[in-house]
Amino acid sequence: MMYDLIIIGGGPAGVTAAIYAARHKLKTLLITRSFGGQIARKAVEIENYPGFEKISGLELIQRFEKQARKQNIDIERDLVEKVKKIRKGFLVATTSRTRFQSKAVIVASGADPRPLEVPGEKEFIGRGVSYCTACDAPLFQEKAVAVVGGGNSGFEAALALTNYARKVYILEFLPQVKADPSLRELARRKKVEVRVNAALKEIQGEKFVEAVVYQDRRSKKTIVLKVQGVFVEIGSQPATSFVRDLVDFSKRDEIIVDHKT
Image (cartoon, rainbow, N blue to C red):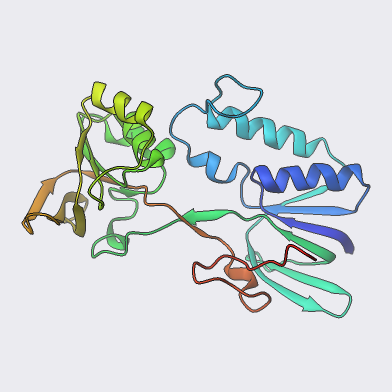
């Protein structure tokens, strides 16, 4: 079957594209591993989404999916592996070895968590290293944890973790954090300990995470911080590797577009 349009991604952008495609009566396929995108990893309630004074990430995702499924479109729960140009349009291949064809493709795959790229990170994924506070916070009841990253996402993760962990640290590489003042005040009230100028060097442990090692960039001292969990919140990187051979990318792996076309 040749679709008019294939949309890759089930976050806000992908679902919005699907709604408008259906309204224009395009034969549309939405491919997504899961609905929600980065909202699925939101650790605290969302308070800046128009129309909702306050709503949890999970509830908002459920509303996205419900509305998407009401549209006259096909939905495939899968992960796109490759997009290739063919004579009459595009061939989209998924990790389940399914192939789809369309006249046009919208890439709305969003971004994946940016890794720390320090020794011990990969070894302890699922054994103390996490990229999803909303998913894993309950596993750290009465434990000490470190959140790496002092932006809004880092502070939101830390605040969520205070409901479970006995001690929460925030490690920020820069001399000062970038989180909004309101989040910083909430973290202060919750007794979250913020450490700036912290350059993470290693994650240590045997079977599970037992400590992080960082260098104080001001004093140059190496510090071993005893924690049982590390939550990574240092930003995201575009999830667009499947069009690597099809389009041009910026130095930050963002797709370069011509707004005039």
